[in-house]
Image (cartoon, rainbow, N blue to C red; front, top):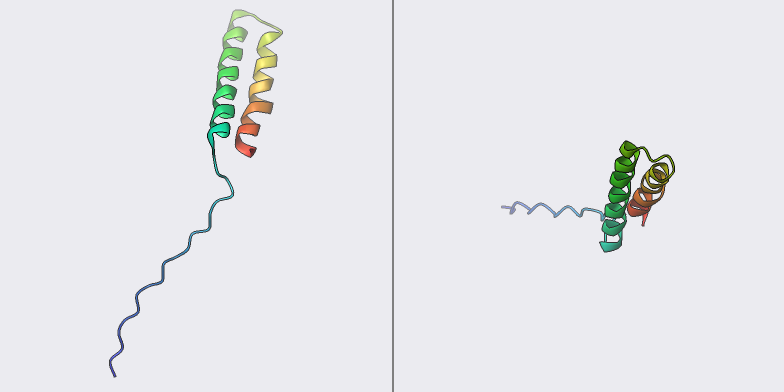
Length: 68
């Protein structure tokens, strides 16, 4: 009795729950722009606009870009 060797089954890779789309990219890029402008304003001495942009970038836009 000769038996043929079985071909290995293809491993099914589960799809990741994180799927990035255009809205994710837009939010991440806008977060990076807000952070960059915030640091530029901070270097220029802005005490109101810089912290607002940095918080907006780090706390709002970047997490939304990852979550959505």
